[in-house]
Image (cartoon, rainbow, N blue to C red; front, side, top):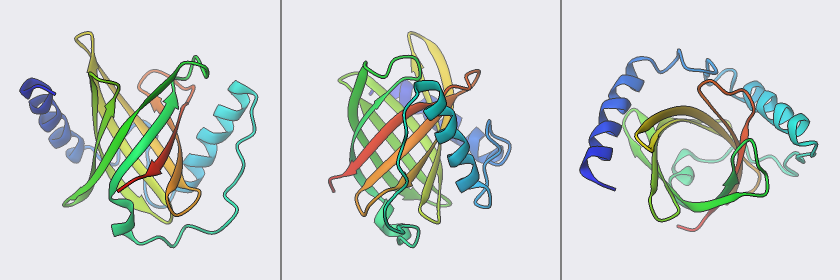
Length: 168
């Protein structure tokens, strides 16, 4: 990651903090589960797959348990067979959770959000071929170390998919 990417992220992050509750999905701790369910249903309908609900109640997780490093696998909305892989690092920087996705050898994405009742919400930003992208993802814990998430980018309403496995 070069310094210009980091500087852009810091500027985006500051702007995001000012508009935190007026984002694409109008997310708040009160509607996080319903927004996740909406994305999950949209994904299932688009890709004609069933995503099972978690078998146990993982909503009572401690906030500090969310932070760490995760292995990630996912796919874009238009192609379930073209997987991307990488790592997601989550850390606390008051007043929010910060995120850095490392996808493949050259792609970095940056995010900021919050954890509530077993769900993790992150708004994210990245550049690709000199073009800037913004989006949002909501993850749900399906076990102590595994999360499933659905994401959308500005201008798209078909969700992408990610799974995370905590490694540190």
